[in-house]
Image (cartoon, rainbow, N blue to C red; front, side, top):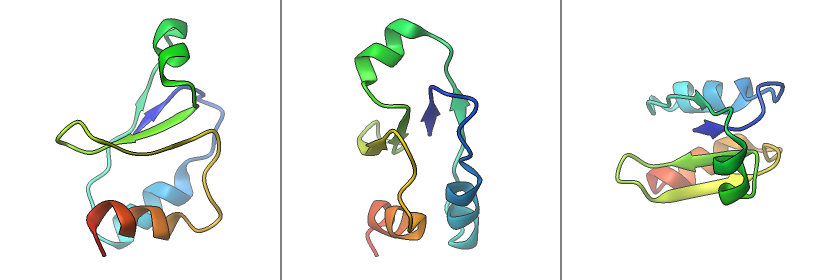
Length: 72
């Protein structure tokens, strides 16, 4: 997960990933040029480099995001 805003509470997503035994690492990026390219405050990138999800805020049901990413 790339996060371009350290004030965002991403704990629900981390908890949903952990509950499903999906490894998830968060990188906080403080680079305006990169943030401008990504256009959102959160970007979930799979290990193969595919952007699986992006948004400015977490969805209400973060579990659905994790399940979609892992193909459930």
